[in-house]
Amino acid sequence: MMRRAEQTTVQPVAEPDLGPLPETLRRNQPLVPADSVAGRALVTVIAILTFLAALAAGAAELVAGASAEWRSSISREVTIQVKPNTQRDIEADVATATAVAGADPQVDSVSVYSKEEAERLLAPWLGTGLDLVELPVPRLVVVRLKGGITPDLAGMKQQLAEQVPTASLDDHRLWIARLSTMAGTLVVIALAIVGLVLTAAALAIAFATRGAVASSREILEVLHFVGADDRFIAREFQLRFLGLGLRGGAIGCLAAILLIAALGFLAGYWRASPGGDQIEALFGAFDIGWRGYGAVVVVAAIVAAVTALVSRVTVRRHLSGLG
Image 1 (tube, rainbow, N blue to C red):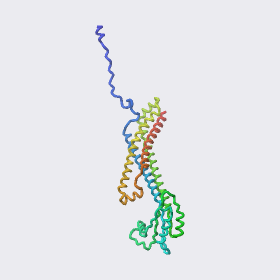
Image 2 (cartoon, one colour; image 1 turned 90 degrees about the vertical axis):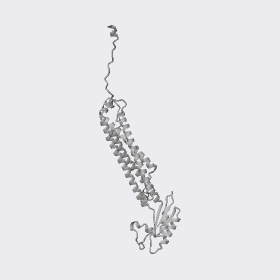
Image 3 (cartoon, rainbow, N blue to C red; image 1 turned 135 degrees about the vertical axis):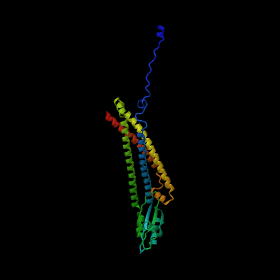
Image 4 (cartoon, helix red, strand yellow; image 1 turned 180 degrees about the vertical axis):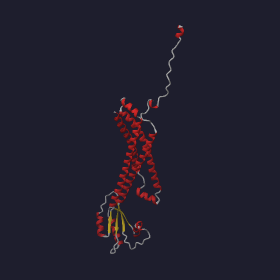
């Protein structure tokens, strides 16, 4: 009996198989879900808003660059208008005005519009096929100034007033002021659009963050009451939404750059056509340059930064309400 008792061994009790732990209880799982339908929807919204803001920023740079070219071109030209007078020889007056302008050291070149060329300038307003013999059409002398200097046209105006009383000098200051006002207004509108889009992005991110906080409310309350640092919890949400903002901003930024580049390519392709000439006259070569593309990238970075900041502020406010 003793031998049989000694040979008896105690078998360990098998633990019940509980299966794998739930996803929310496993270690090294993120506090905020790594991916979800709401997260993908937020990326789409951020991409669309970034795309719109980037286009507005690119348009502002395009208008600003075109306006600078317009003003630079117009400021280097002045126009002498010689009005016809029955008591004077208009051809002699045009020749005298051309000589006065050509003698000025600030002038680079002088070109005279013939009577036929001056009449063609009126065709868009008066139509074609009209007999303008009886119409007193003024003659134009276009004066191109040298670059890199600040012109002083007082002496030229005085000489014209003395030698050609029927001539008047237009330095295009009124047009330059109007162009500056128009371009400045368009740039301000574009920047306002960028600000509105960023505001809309901030509101969308705030609602998305509140939704994420509401879905994890029980976990946050437990972590908060057991002493988890608010900065740790807020940092988890901030990093998560920063990733979403970077992804959406990159998609929107890339789409905007591709669209702007495609429009520039099409403008260059249509440059030989009349419509292309008008586009080039308005917007130049339709190229926003490196500064414009840099502005597009900056807008995408700002959207990502706003995403992270708004999510952090929203979570901190929620956690402060728990305390």
